[in-house]
Image 1: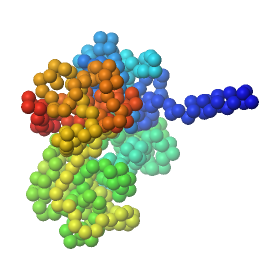
Image 2: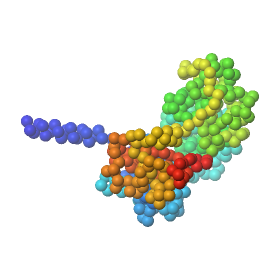
Image 3: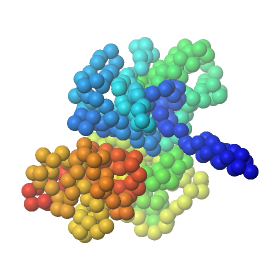
Image 4: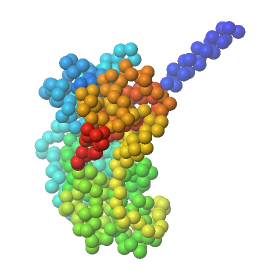
Length: 454
């Protein structure tokens, strides 16, 4: 009987171990071209603190915070070896690989490599200007075939007009989308110069005998700065509405027509008042996605081009307009549309909006443990009333003081250290943690404000 009980317990432990999810080692998109490697992480660079010796990496929904020794940490930028200070110059969302060692169940970073642009033969390249001229002509007059090499989910952000999705990961299963004429002009693009999908698609097309191949190496990021992209009704519904992704959605039809049926969250604007309408848009530095639709595609394109001429980027057109949306039997709102644009960027995991932060502080921090995680020399000069001073570097020493039955709210000068504190507390079992991700001016009288332009 005892033997059976022991075997049963061992079986239960083994099952629990088998069910424990493996740690994430790379962003999903990285897996298209790379295999998982031991003691290596691939993803997007988010934050760094040289003082703390911590670097933050994002892999889709997973964020990893790794310790490192600045004096021993290697930074590889192509053929160059950079100093630790170079970490502060790496832009957020830059693709990187981090090598690490594991000790006592914790990962310690030893090296960071910055993803470099892929090399494409000069004769195969096509510029933004050249591609724009062809797109303006259209495939029939321009005599070209344009392919988006990204996976379908990645195209939900918008595609270059006239493009067909031929995802590199499923290239071999979709060769029927290529033209029969091997001498036809075939153009591939993807997510920019560090993305391998369009150069890799070009190589596959070459192996199939296509002779006139071009790669638009700059891809969607560069195109979107000066030109509009297309969203299909399916892409907009699944990639934006269903996910609650923030955008400025503009209905340019006549008000009385729009009130009979419009898209959720749409703001009404009239094409004849485009200059007046532009003044009500979010500041350009917010880089808000602007999605325009009318009865059909052509009506929206004209409005989109006006926005682009005014210096706005990231402008998208709903392909087929309200007609295509209705044909797809997607949900429609009735009644009056909004007239005032309210654009609120999507908050990061754990992030608290500035408005909620202010309200929490002004309400007296009820059931809130409020932490100023800046270094002591900064918090000593000025701090927000009610905050307890625990620098991030000393957070682990003070865990016994921080309750788990209250919301823990962290702030710093810029949001960087506060976000690191958020992930450190999550790792240690805290479940109700928030942080402010804003650049603050904190005054001697304990008042505070958001720094201009932040």
